[in-house]
Length: 120
Image (cartoon, rainbow, N blue to C red; front, side):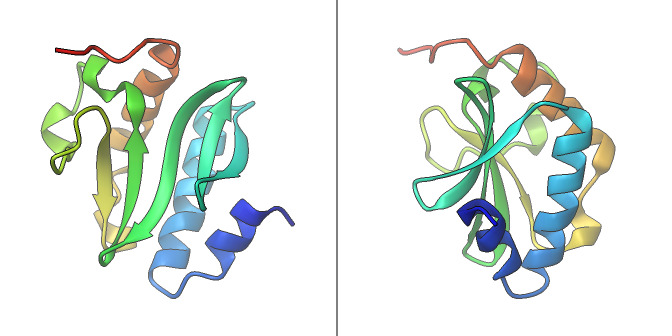
């Protein structure tokens, strides 16, 4: 088992269930993504391009996206939390997950995966 899978399986509930659900949605939506372990959290990559990361922190699961500044859908659902480039969807329970929103955000992350950060 790779370290990213271990990270997911060792989380307490409800985070473990949230992560497992996210894993199914991500891997179903983007066949060919690779689950890696970088910076001590699971990351999904398509080739050399990051799609998103999964992080349990501060009482929620954070699904972070680098290319979110290019997204045209669901910007109102993405949290920046004082981060300059990364935005994320956050889930405290499995019931918080809107699969359709997550799928549409993942599709945008895939489309914009090779874009560079827009700097001021």
